[in-house]
Each structure stands twice: as structure tokens, then as C-alpha cells.
Length: 142
Length: 142
Length: 82
Length: 82
Image (cartoon, rainbow over all chains, first blue to last red):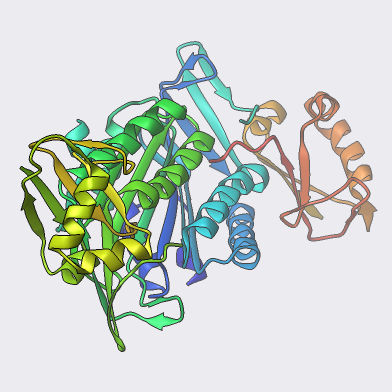
């Protein structure tokens, strides 16, 4: 199950498909909280035309799996999916999907929010943005 | 737009379809947080076989619209969808969907969590649970 | 004339989904409740027990609210959506 | 021999994606960095500037970490996933 729940991939993912997998993991699940990150056309006062994500194969997946395990340990939740896309991403495209299934909503909200914060903090993934002024690797991190 | 974003309906909803509508409302949207409530097979120590939701037609939709407007006012978010199903619901079925699109994730998380709390607090919707011991209208509210 | 609606558990307890009441002019919600308690005896216990909200024209109000002809009143048991 | 990888902006700045280094036995990460600064001059400024994490076998480590033959070292600019 872990391999399907943690993925770094170039292709898009299906929000409904992944949500259904989480739902099917237990009939005890009453609350599912999802974070979907999409490519905005504007960041830090700068127009964005497109972006590209690089990653450290192996380590990126390992860190996402660590985040999943830690969330399952620290929060009263039942299942977690974390998927991050890499490669070329157009404006409006999906980038990252985190789905947390729990008996109750409070834990699902807290765990989902923690997972995306932690993903940004420890996962070796990098973003290159193409703007009208040129191409830049994003260093600063909101 | 408001009519499509606020719905009380017997039929199921599509998580992906509704998410895409939110995404398409603005290219400024970078973070989408979704709460999906599903029918659990167990609640307060009691096995559940199925459930039924009653509502006050007109007032329920009005309260959901009020919640949407208040969230758009109080949080730095771009769009909100709130859909609640009524009628017969089987275990595992979708019950409620709240989707919040924002530029940044923190506001999306806070607004989505607030919306579901507020929905439970002020929306005239009632739940009848069928258990092995009989049929009960749920009074207490987690 | 006003319409009075009962939802969820109250439908069964009161034995009706909706009744029409002739107010005989403007009155308060309090007075309407007293009249209903006589017409629909189970309502006495229900109101005694507490936890019931009352709406006038789809907004929850206090008992001193004024009721006029044409208003839609509803007795609302504790909400359980979500 | 250890493999040293450079990701994202570092690939371009260093001009290489991966180099192989002969350690001549067990050493510290600190010593490996000194050797790399000589072999790959742009790395000097990059490390000076700060903000770079270094991993050994896919775990971020401190500079006193011990490096052994077969290890995979990586220079990681600030993460920007999500």
C-alpha cells in the first residue's frame, strides 16, 4: 500500500481516484481532508509563464514516506496519500496532492496541514520558474 | 456562480469535478483545501447500518450561502463550494463537500475548517441513524 | 394565518409536519407557542426538555420576536449536518 | 570512491550533475568538501553563500559526518516543493 500512497511522478494524478482509495481503506473514515497545490500564474509580484520541478530520485520518495509514517504516528488518522509531480508544469496544473483520512475531521485537518508544511521543509524537490524576465530557480520559500 | 457553489441535493457529487470548477475560477489559486465527510459505520460506540438526512429546504441553502459569504469576507481566499447531500445515505457514501481555493494554503486550511464547524453549528440539517438497536435521530453533536 | 413547520424528530413527536394557525393579529412568538401547546399537547414536553430553536422566516429568533400574518415559523431540533 | 551529486541550480553553477571522488580511505564530509572546492572552483562561492544542505546516503548530515567508500553524497539547494 505504501508504494501507491507515496509517489513522485511526471504524470498528473486524479483527485477523485486517490480520494476513493483512501475512503476504501477503512469504513471508519468519516473525515477526509485534502490539500491540492496548483501552479499559480503569479508569485511574489512576478508573473509566471510555466515551471519545472527537479527532485532527488530516491531521497524525495523516502522523505515523503517518512512524512506519511510520522503523520500516522503523531495524529489520530487512518490513511495518508502524498503525491508530488515533477518535470514541466503549466499554469493551472496540479503539483502536489495530500489526502488524509481520519475518523474525525480535527485530526485530518491538523495532519494534512502538518504534512504539506513538512513536505516543503524536508523534501528534496526544487522549482524553476519561467517569467517574462527569465528563468529562475526558486530559493525563498513561503 | 453562487447557485452552483452552494447545493443541497440527494444525488452524489464529484470531488474532481467540483475541484476543477474552483481551480478554473482564478489562475491565482495556488492552494485548494477540501473537506469531504463520509458515512462511517461506527459512531459513539454504536454500529451504524445506514443513515438519512432531513433538511429545511430554503433555510439550509440560505445558511450555507451565508457561511460561504462570511468565509470569503473573513479569510484571504478566492472561492468556496459547499455541497450537502440529503435523503438516504449508505455507509461509505459521501455526505458533505467543502472546497476552498486560495492563493496560499494557510488561509485555505483555516477557512475550510471554519466552514465545516459553522455548517454543523447553524445549518438546519438532521441525521437519522439506523443501528442494530433501532432508528435514532442524532441529537448530540461532536 | 401563519405556517408552523416541524422537522426531523419533531415531525414524529408532534405527529404533524406542518400546521396553519390563525393568529388574530400581530402577536409574539411566546404567545404563539402557548397557543400551540394547547393545540398540540406533545409540544409541551418537547419545549420543556429544551434544545429546540425556533425560526421565523428562516432566521433563528428569540421568544420575544413579533409574528405577523404570512410568517413561516419552524421548530428546529439540534442540528446534525456534516 | 564516492559519488557526489548536484541538484537544481547547483547543476548549472557547478557545471556538473555528478562527480566521482577517490577518498583514499575513510574521511569526514568537511575534508571531502575541501577537496571538491579545489576540483570544482564554483563550489567555493556556493558554500560560502550558505543555505546548502548536504546529504550522505539520502540523509541530511552535519559537516563532521564520516564518509566511506560507496557513499552517495549530494549538495542540496533550498527546497522548493509543494
